[in-house]
Image (cartoon, rainbow, N blue to C red; front, side):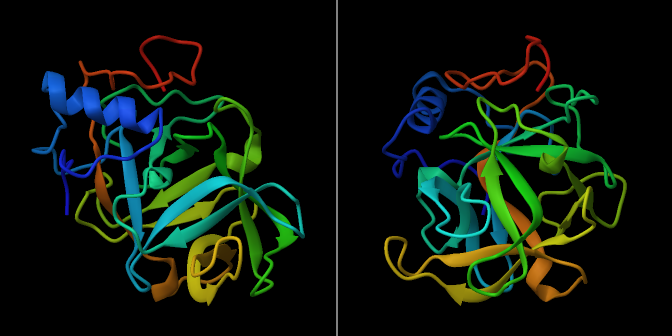
Length: 227
């Protein structure tokens, strides 16, 4: 798992710029850190189904009609990077460990929309729809997720769950596959009860230490020192 593979870079900005500059100029990736920190840019793997949390500028044809969120098997896809941020009223200072029980936002790096859920039905399983919502990292209270883990902080090697704060549902994958235009991608949705389908693990990424800023990334906050 773990660090950035400079031989396999994404092909679209801004993720390409972030990671290319990290390789060329030697930005520390925080690979020695054992925990996830605020401001980090990460990929999340659903352990049961071996797919990474993913989004793209493709909207649902039903439900909310918002940007779709799926699971993909591809390791290198730049559309699977998410930025770990605080909520609209609780700052998440860049480089500080994310605590178990802390509420965060996950912002899709390539589109600037936040992981989001609401009471619309998901298109394949009719569970609770999960979408990407907002503009340049600003959405609403339905973008907030609480990190559920076993210790004091979110450890990179640990299986964790993400509970949607407003609806109390858990980010999940149960294996349903889409057809065209996103053939083979898995449905991501939210479910009320915990199960193996709702366990996630941190994979590739740039893990910020307190003094580090991800070069070339968009700062979605209005402060220069916080996400």
